[in-house]
Length: 263
Image (tube, rainbow, N blue to C red; front, side):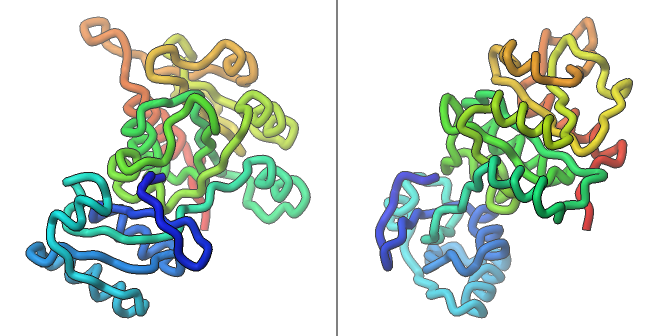
């Protein structure tokens, strides 16, 4: 999350900047927001609605100048809004699997998760989270090493999706995928040389694994996949797609085929 932290009532707090990120935080976890700062000279109808929402929730609203918002968020791309809030909880993937196996409180048909294999660009992380939210993924699995963190850049790129979609952390992705397979998940890996996605069965429950920007999926990750799926590209085009673009196309195919979020 953002590095600009403070302490309040023993909690570690962060500043979240940007219209969509602030709006989604207010909507998805208002109990975690302690105050809202608004640029005094930036009173658009959209910001006025955010102010109304915060006041309805009895969250203090303070009007500040542009420089004060810059110092709080450490960026000039705050879009006139900043919220001081608790960091979003990142859940343990092993705990998720325990609930999955023991309680059975998930609808298992049409259920998919997205896992990231060493995605290091925060903008790609944000863009993948945005597509995952749009196309009905039920969560995003991230690793705690050699991976992008949920930074301001990632939050902005996600247009608030990182505040909305569940995040699961795995200390070791290989172990996490192996455990998921034992729990009944199908594992599909994104690969340029994989089977065209529209020819794959795309069984559920499933985990779609997206590889790093330069190297793609690690060999150890590929070996854990039930199938590698790809996106054929034009011979006249560039040699490969950006990781977040490829992820979005594959997630759309999953969504189109009916492996989607359920009420």
